[in-house]
Image (tube, rainbow, N blue to C red; front, side, top):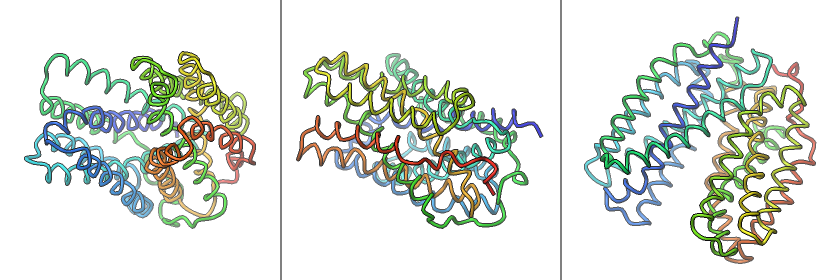
Length: 381
């Protein structure tokens, strides 16, 4: 069968999921103000969101084995917009915390299921598509940020924004999900619903954790480093995050073509080396503008690493694709959760500059280690 329609459909799912979550995230200041939450209270809701996402990921393998990723995504792309609108309708902080927790669980389920679907489509297509899917997610964050800025400037209330966005996203999800890959074509959909923690899976999982720690460092601490350590103005400091995100988006847009041209293994090693060089420039160069350029290089280098690792996960034997992806997303979420905190604790002891500099040898090690990403497609079960 042709995979062009399922490929476009799953790419659209990444975009829809990204728009839903990004709309919630970029509206965080308004949400915090609306419910009159303290910093600690708002931080607690974020922790509930993340824990619920991690917990739900453990169930995705059995869910997809029983119903298929298309059915799971069809349900979640209804649930997530409804929960986004429910944020606006929450009568108080306790209700909001419950909605945020449910939204975290729905996002965790969607994240694992859509990556499992994309990995299967890539296997059937015989060509890389994961970079394009993750590029759609990156683009969604930019779109949501720009839309929020425009709507906030126009004075559109939080409730109206969230409800209208939810309706649009709900309609989009209902249109897209019938075109996703059917269950009958999903690898191992009826068996091996849980993935054992084999050595290759652990290696790839820890790679994902390390990569998400690097991403959290750039996005969460890059601007702080430029402002407090390099004396950059606030606009220049903020440009570090923009540069990293722009580099990451650009790399993912070209990543699938590059993977076809040079191969997954060489592209992974080159990306990790470029990311290491980018972080080195960002941390070691004294001029703020050179550091911003370094963050752009780091974003470009890291852009292909997570998609290529997802692709490698889908080639591992011994379990269904959804079960493997569910395990892997647990590792990556651990990096997202622990990364910013670990950077903060280390910076308290050794200084932020030295802490960020420690990312460079970590990326060099990732680039030099033998890569499970080079597992040939024919070895997939």
